[in-house]
Amino acid sequence: MALSIKEWYHMISNATIADVLLDRLIHNYHRIELGGESMRKRIKGSEALEKTP
Image 1 (cartoon, rainbow, N blue to C red):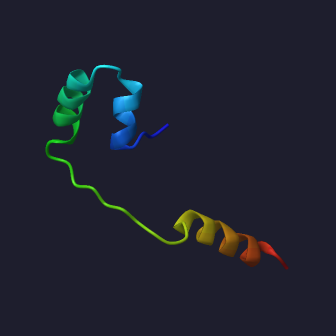
Image 2 (image 1 turned 90 degrees about the vertical axis):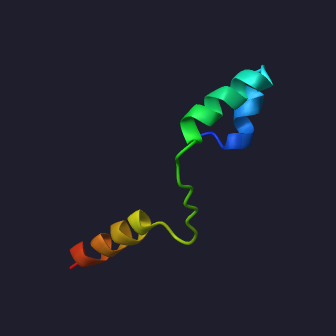
């Protein structure tokens, strides 16, 4: 289960502790947001078409 950064504050009752944990976890991370249809769904759909005689 993935939590957005905003949800961490709801899950951890102490805002200071949430800040410290998030600071340690996301200090050097790069956030990449992808849009569009999942490639897994596309690949799975095309495999099903290829297997159909």
